[in-house]
Length: 352
Image (cartoon, rainbow, N blue to C red; front, side, top):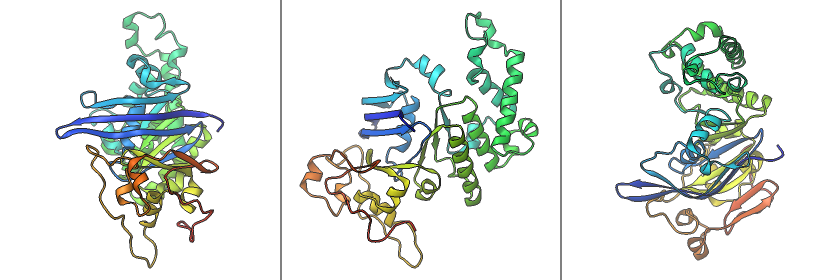
């Protein structure tokens, strides 16, 4: 992990709604290093999915607008890249996606094998090593060269075994409804790995699974990503899953990033008031649940300055007037707060 693979700087995204313009992302800064697993956490509506979609270039064309900022990936700004090149070279190739609901991501009327074959025909890492796409007539695009098909199929079977799917040949002959939810999610992980990407965006990939299967999937994803030196952006509202899988965590609130830290620092010495409130709301033995006072602000007329200041017990006029700059308070630990907690340790650790 020597350099940033992805660097998002001052990204602003707004949506046109019936009641006005919603400022969904407000100068968000975010980075992922090569081979790193980063958790993006926060309450529903904080902008996690919008950030992931902006990176992939799949924001709704009719309602979404990027108002400023950069998304730097491998030294290129994705926001300036032509859409055709983004589709061919980045989306589904160097950046892949694991959705929240694997069942709706498969076509129910085709076998799993036929759908994976289509993916490999266009996104296989072997595609550029054959004459299929370079100097070929248009009609050759319909062909799937036999030699490459065999190599791609062997790679598919190898990855299905890597994600611990039994009898992969039989799985390829089945339809999506004939396998379990955990198996479908393992298939989605395999499909994300097939193009040999450098970054995988996983959008709450274990939400639809029970706790036991969820733990297996998290362990599998972490192991495969680290073994292949692949970076993962893991978006979730579940702090427990980030503790299990992530190297570093960034917390967002109402379209602004609040704090970024290693997983150990994030849980043991959080500095932003919002981060502390989130962790204090986690259930513990023999303790009453603690909520966060106040309501999430509307993004059509959001608060000025730090968007958390109306709910913060440390806020003053400066917090309302000016959004704080990012401060580095420890190694690999930054916070956007005028009054952060900078004690070396909290009075009690929030995670034992």
